[in-house]
Amino acid sequence: MVPLAAVRGALPMNRPLIIGAGIAGSAAAIALAKAGERPLILERSRETGDALCGGFLSWATLKALNQLGVSPETLGGHAVGKVRIHAGGRIAEARVPAPGMGLSRHRLDTVLLDQAIQSGAAIERGVAVRSADATGAETGDGATLAAPALFLAAGKHGLRGHPRPAPGSAARDPVAGLRQRLGAGPALAAMTGDAVELFLFDRGYAGLVLQEDGTANLCLAVHKSRLAEAGGQPERLLEQWRGQSAALAARHDAAKSLGAIDAIGAVPYGFVAPGSNPDAPWKLGDQAACIPSLAGEGMGIAVTSAISAATSWQNGEAAGHWQAGFARRLAMPMAAARTIWWAGESPRITALAVPLLGSMPAITRGIAAMTRVAG
Image 1 (tube, helix red, strand yellow):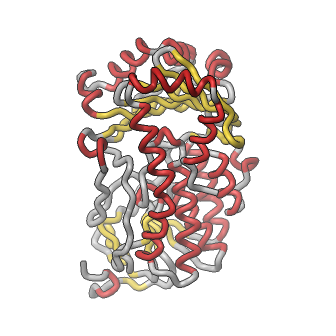
Image 2 (cartoon, rainbow, N blue to C red):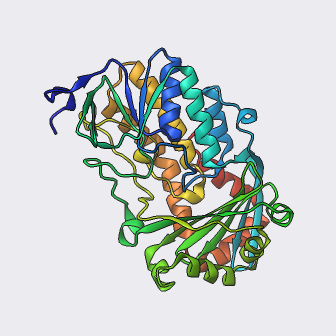
C-alpha cells in the first residue's frame, strides 16, 4: 500500500486521527487529549446509537475507565455482583471478584464521547472511511487526510485492507451475534437481580444483564449451523432455546415488552491482530482482538487497548511493535476464553461442568479472573 501521506493532494493534519467514536475510539481520544494532543474522531453515524454488543462492564474495565476520569458514579449503571450459569436445567452461581456493571452501549458511548470532547478532542460525523494506514485515511467521498498517527477503532465493522480472519471453529462454522432488549418489569428484575446470566446451549449461548434503566440486554452468540437448523430465523431459534431452558423462558415472559432482534453476522471470535506491519495503523478494540463474548471482556479490551496505544504512541513506540506486545498480553485471557467458549457449547461437557461449578464457586471466580484484560 502506498502511504496515504504520500498521496498527491492529501490534506495534512497535525493531529492524530481516530476512526470510530465507540468505546475504543472515545477512550483513545480521552487519553490523547489528556496528554496534550488534539485528536480528531471520524464517525460514520450521525448519532450515537445502541451498539449490538456489550452491556456488561467488568470490575477490571471499570478500573480502566476510572483512569480516564470516568467513574462508576458518572456511568450510573446497574450493579452486578454475581455470575449465574444455566445449562440443561442446572444452575451454578458465584460472586464475581469485584463488582461490575450492566450498562447500555448508548449510555456508555455517550458518556465517553462527551468526556473526549470536553478533554479537547473533536469529532466529524457522517464520515465514512474507505481505507486507512499508519499515515492517514481515505474517506468515502475521495478525500485523503494525512496524520501523524491513525487509530483504527471501527468496532466489529471491517475495513478494506485490514482483514480479521476468525480462527478455529469460528472459521469453520461462523458465528452470528443477536441482541434483543427486554422491557423493564419488577418480575424480570427480581429474577435477574445483580447477576450477569449465561444460558448455555448446543453451539451457542445467551447472556442477560439488567441495564441502567431496568431494561435487560439479551445477547446471543450462535454458530450459523445451529441458526440454519432454525430455518435461519432468530425468532425461531430463540423459541427453541426457550423450550430448552425454563429459566430463559421465564425471564423472557417477565419482560414488559420485547424489542426487535438485531443481528450481526460472522463475528471473528478468537481473532487477534498480530502486529509487526510498519504500514498498519494502531488497531484498537475489536480491531485488535475479538474475545469470545461470554467472557464479558470485549469492552475491557476496547478501553485497555486505547489507553495502552495512546500512551505508547506518546512515548514514540512504533504501532507494529505495540500491536505485537498487546497480542502477547492477550494470549492467556484469549486462550482461557476460547477454551471456556468451546466447553460451553457442548451439552455433554456442561452437564458435568455446571454441577461442579455450582459446588465450587471459587472455580468460577478463578475463570472470571483469568479472562480479564483490563486493569
